[in-house]
Length: 264
Image (cartoon, rainbow, N blue to C red; front, side, top):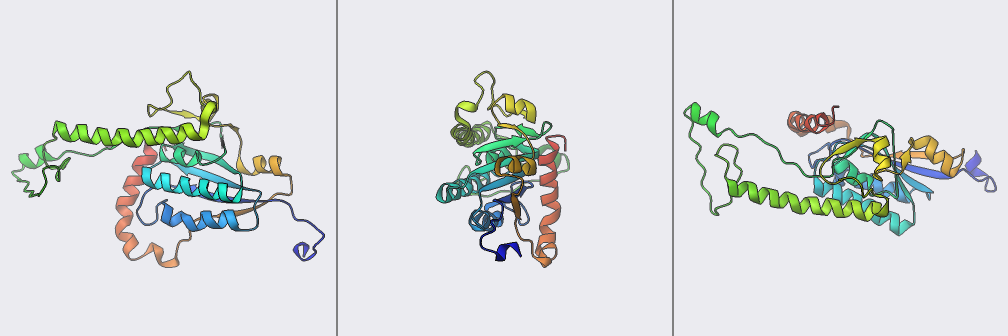
């Protein structure tokens, strides 16, 4: 009934966006298309005093990370709404890219943060198929079209080209972190070599602003009567069936590989 009485003010509102899971373009993963509606609602619904990002992600696609982070910053600037990131288990690689969209980052003492680097991994099967008498036949127009084919011997020039691409992406990642964190970053440690740290050390290095959890921190900032609303991607009832099942096994393997890097 309180909202029907005009002279009784409600407490300030904090809208929470859950950014959980591997950042992948596949259906069911964390990507800009899936999370955009939730982010848009979080900045527009109920005149929020702040938007809080609940992050638990081992990373993934650099482009999707960039798109999501850019959307958050654009809306924050347009609406004049401060953004706070709260890291649960992991904000590493692309997950940390998302955290850097916030004005301030808070972590649990045992959270994992960092991993500011780029990785590409795969397998080579050329010796295996040769051993079994299998011949690989590939026809291309363009000399580089079949580069890094896992069923053909690795070529030095292909590796050089891949590493050049990785370096370009790494520079973009580093620029994003430096723009977000600025002078808060430690000058005494190599932060951009792909290493990662626990939350407490991350605070010491300037990768995060403090130790804290979402509800108590937001109530400390905005008052005990702060109200919360949670926003996340909508999953259709039938989303678990049909075509999504075909993607499920491979997506699960990919995501487990990302989490496993951090012992989870």
